[in-house]
Length: 265
Ligand SMILES: NC(=O)c1ccc[n+]([C@@H]2O[C@H](COP(=O)([O-])OP(=O)(O)OC[C@H]3O[C@@H](n4cnc5c(N)ncnc54)[C@H](OP(=O)(O)O)[C@@H]3O)[C@@H](O)[C@H]2O)c1
Image 1 (cartoon, helix red, strand yellow):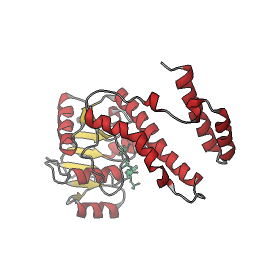
Image 2 (cartoon, rainbow, N blue to C red):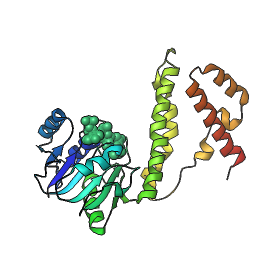
Image 3 (tube, rainbow, N blue to C red):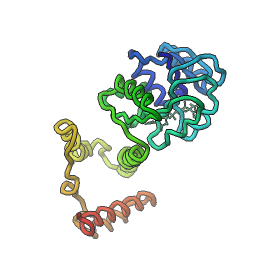
Image 4 (cartoon, rainbow, N blue to C red):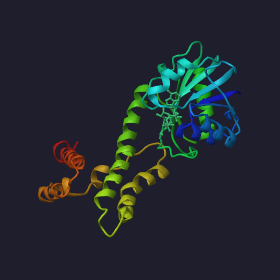
């Protein structure tokens, strides 16, 4: 099968690395930076290619470009192609506006790091414009990860929102906390145990109940907001200089109070 890839960022390199030794090895690579295309092509044994020239007939093209460029890059493709794939949790399948081809989504629910992020246990949400497209993308995804499931746009969008709240916001809170305590004699690693306590039930739940079950986050909530300890909350707010962090502290405390004391259902 002839497979091409457009893009040279984190998603692109993950695909190159995770499909390297599979039957769906990526053979053609295109991107804006010719230097990056050359180095990735050498590393993952593929050919540099220009998707605007119509020189190769491909079975599959992965569009691993920024969400806002998917539509534009799609218009640039001159090759006839069997299946076009994007990797965005937030975008519609229909964004792949190209004549006479099937369309699919392969979205990894992960925070991809550079250098060919390992996707072997990452949940991969797939979608397809036809049963053939869905079959092929599911088959490709199954060679990458042990956890592949079908998700249409509404479910994908909701899961994407959850990923932003949990991962992106949590990582931002780590950065803010790091700054907040920078004058302390201890660094962010002082919170390793409390973070382990927060995440361990979710990890154990995944191992022990892979299909169903839920974690009781409600009864595990601690801290001044759930205790309605307004005096400590005021002291904390006085200590925070960063106006954005002040707003975050207020909003999250109000949300905890609302969930536990006003809408405990
Ligand atoms: N990063 C994640 O954690 C993650 C997770 C799941 C899904 N995804 C999805 O993966 C896709 C790619 O994201 P990424 O993380 O790989 O982003 P990235 O590391 O920022 O890379 C984006 C790539 O898109 C290229 N690009 C942007 N605009 C372009 C244009 N107009 N024409 C040609 N190439 C263009 C960039 O080229 P230049 O380098 O020349 O700018 C770069 O190669 C997105 O749909 C994203 O939602 C990402």
